[in-house]
Length: 247
Figure 1: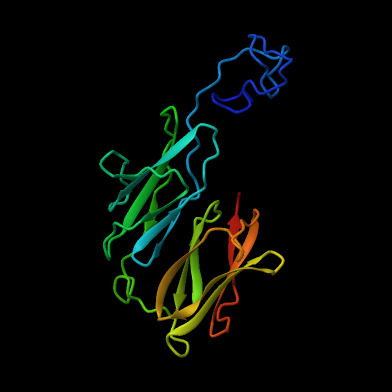
Figure 2: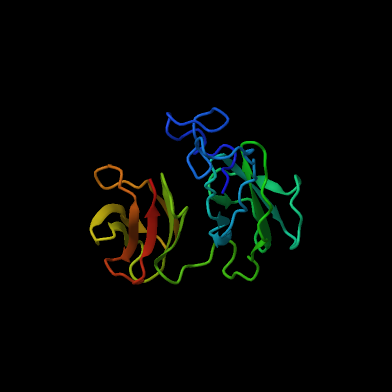
């Protein structure tokens, strides 16, 4: 496999060995004096995959798999209200550099359709993803006013995350209100890492940010963590939310 232009493996081999063009050797099968000469291909980045979205409160949260190309730049995110649309400058809504986006410019009862492409630092654009439909029509309870029926952690984004993740949770009328709500973060061994929420809450949907730090303020290492919510010290949902921290 020949190296792509801007690969970090170019001219990164042993400084005492040279490629046949006289430059420092590349890392890989074609580097060094016994390799071969070829033109580094400046290929477009891969098509973003695993695009998903969900309605959280009055916003649509979009997630996808992050690109890992050495010269990756950003994404081109397009949205329309008609299925089968073609991406253009007229429906480009954002150019995020991370693998999630919160679309808060939406209207109640309107369905939305998204497509996304990746862009590198040389201006090469990938093909577009398949269309993602986020259906909001038929949601009962009014826009942003649906009363939660369970106390639970609904979602977290981005996940995996590097610097911080936003945890969305709901509080239901399952006892005296305002209710005592606790959200704790545990490591994979079940040890308490962070007491994230410890306060009284009214019925509703809330968001809290965890910066990947423990109760002493130190950065937690990369790994798998779990967020657990309780109401009046009762765990109404046995399933915990898995959080993946990547430093």
